[in-house]
Length: 230
Ligand SMILES: [Zn+2]
Image (cartoon, rainbow, N blue to C red; front, top):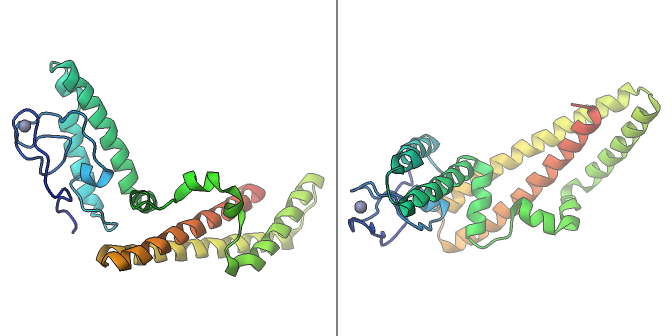
């Protein structure tokens, strides 16, 4: 598993000068919280920048660091150290929340690699976000017609069992496409982990495209759920 520290030259503790080998937030020798620690989320856990994480190990390390960085432990330390433990705890929590989720993990890694991805980017680029993937144009067109009809039916209180069945099966179809995207994300993520820099560049582009597709499909499923009242 990718557990080797990614920090090529580990920083040293401000208090005792020991090397910060397992996390830049905490000295393994004297237990002092490290002030103004700036680390990316992978570095927080001493992990390489890889997508295939051992989540059990991540969870264990999170709890270990949480306990050791807990502000209560620094109640009698200097004010600087107290603030340091608050900041380190906040960073640790953000890092854990992001890395334990496989989708957020990909989004975060791509951002670290300088790619614009995720909701943040989608918000800035609404029109591209509404553009259906080319292979789904026809299906999405049909779906939108059915959704419109269903909304109209609801307004006038009319039942259309055939339309309801169509929408229900459309939802199942888009949910299966979502599952396929998640599969592809896992496969492409493994290619990123195993690849050299050229392979990684192409894997990163594929991952970004998969995230876009995933977001688009999720929005479709959400639209159907809204109309079906599910
Ligand atoms: Zn130390």
